Length: 321
Image (cartoon, rainbow, N blue to C red; front, top):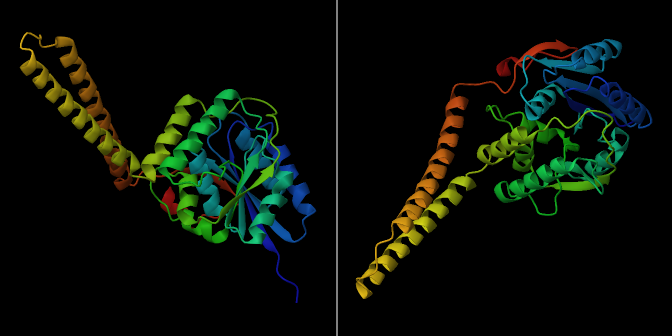
């Protein structure tokens, strides 16, 4: 008796990709046609793109019923789009990749091969990234943040091109709070993760959708949604600042006792007030951010709202709309 084919679900968040998306889908078709041991499906999630991306998705979904389309009512971000795609997926393996063609769909066999070896999650790594200097800098900051705040292994490289097993997906989609962060969800589910090197192509057109504001929001979401380390760091800074203030006050008193002629410094007093006041405001702001996120989550603010589906099931989605 022959073993049943395993199914691979491709999840692709889409934004400003009306001219590149069809090539990515065609490459998946071509690649999986030569990998007869797998069946596959493709889930395309339009993150309320302002161009004709949804029209492209609608057309290719009508041409092939193994492709599913989801259209957001407004822009919720890449990670919300990934969560919507993961909830629609049904494959034994799920592969997430970009819509701009920079992540090579024709090398998906390398990722799937590592899953077959027994790994739970496989991230693509790149010897030479074809990103701008700003985007590469953002990636380095994100890498540092995930290592410090989320305890990511130092040697593990995180990218937007990755493959996971079904049980990891099932754990990820249990997360219902308003601020999904896919990297944190993966690291929460398993530590059996590896990298495999693939090529990284130059962008065919346009520029990255991540500007400074979005990158800052992504980083802040990552370490406030899945870690309390910022609060612990704030506590340590507060203790250190209090100790410095106490020692400085003691030094001022002793100096005055040794030499009564020493004038009390207005500048040093103001500097201390500004320094400690700033520390207090930072810590209060951090605590307020956590409390605000708790408040929003308690109000059941949705991860995303779906306007339209094509070839996609509604079961299991209503709770998130």
